Length: 242
Image (cartoon, rainbow, N blue to C red):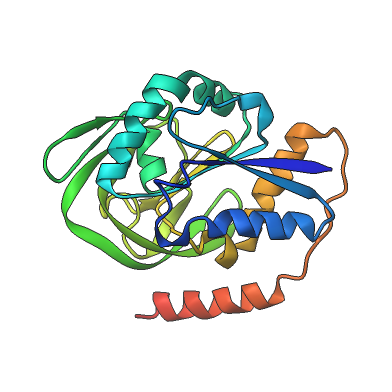
């Protein structure tokens, strides 16, 4: 079996080691004997949706986001929308998360157009939300831990599910108690670089869904996550007992 991962704008959107999420996907897939190919797609490149099984879209600063916003609208929006609507796997972090929505308003009041693929919008706040976060996903009955650092306040529409309910931290906007969103097989979050290393269940869910979409039958070997789960339990206890 083989998985092709597309890394969108690795040269512009890759803060806090977001590329680590791709390395985790590659590592966990290869432990199962699955070949992994990684393809970088950036400014001016054409996005061929049929070539990829997982797309990763990381976070960045406002200036880089403005460059990416223009390029997405000029060269990639239609094929990315078709990819997401077709139910293929997409993981988006922070700035990438915001750009999938209708718009992002910067602290200076500049309005960056988003792709309008997801029913959400983001407005800058006066303070940054920084720190460790714990959320609980009721659909999967899983707890995720991570690190957030963002000034944007994201508000999701009714046709989107939250990635989780906030147990510690700020989440999407510090108001509604939710973090991230899910639409079909697109997962969005403000959790930066260590998302998938700290949450192996989520990493495996993305790999499984990509294989499920590509192959009719396949064997999905169970890996030993005992150390990762032990570390997560420590983080959850520490962050929720403050």
